[in-house]
Length: 390
Image (cartoon, rainbow, N blue to C red):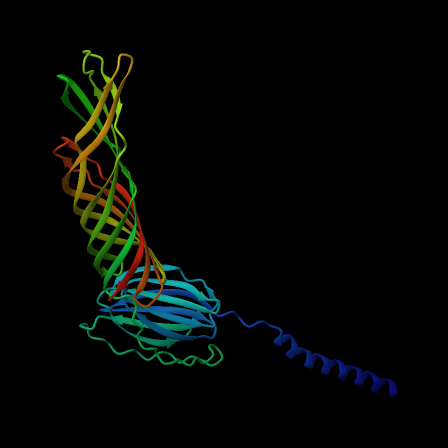
């Protein structure tokens, strides 16, 4: 009898141990990581219905940004994204849908909107969120009742109040910058003949374009979030150094010329350039934008050439010394159409303020009537400045 009682006591202790261990095993099971699984959309009549599937508990906030117009949804506690990084839509005022991990525990969904942004409504559904977009002119059908979510399937989510729209970059902008103009054209070489000592004296003129500073002012407008156009003006100093040679005949002996190098001179001129441009966005994030596009304009520049000179000619029985004492340059104006290509990078530093770095290829090859040839003033412009949207 005593042995039987001991066996029953042992079995009872084992049962209690198994019952107490079961909750511990369940507690060790890890909760699933909230995940943004996928984004799908469909066109129903005149509405665009977007479904964002999220597995796990979450809260969300909305944010509206202008110029370019965007609708931003931040899903908190969601630290994993399986949805595609970009979905092209181009319908009902939605250009594209982008996803990204804004913070370690915040998944961000951005709707790129057209100039005329659609209206929208948000509804929490089972396993995510439903956003309906429609243009204001189109009738909006009432939402159909959504199936009730069972408490054991999805944890209840409290929807925070929608934040007021935050003003971003606006449609119009003005840009001020300065930088360096780097010549990209060969030297201009001219030749002329003068009469000296009753003989022909050929003069060779070489004008070398040097790097110079420039200032730039542009004004424009965003036609769409990815296209902007505008006009601008550039003032540029033009620095030219001379390399001139003359084959001077002998004052007494025929056909015995002497090659003479003129002293190098630096001519400081100016160039004024008016242009129109179009820029198309290649890369865009919340803070960085890279664009490129063509330029077309009209430019005019001052260009100096040798007009006259003074000299001394000392001749002895054994030697001859020719010295150029003065050089006089005349300034002519050259003008014509210009072509160019523009690459522009922006870094947003404030609500309507951006840092800008531009690289531009500028082609300007006008005819110089006095020289009788084209004076190529083409170059590469590198500028830095600021842009203000208003």
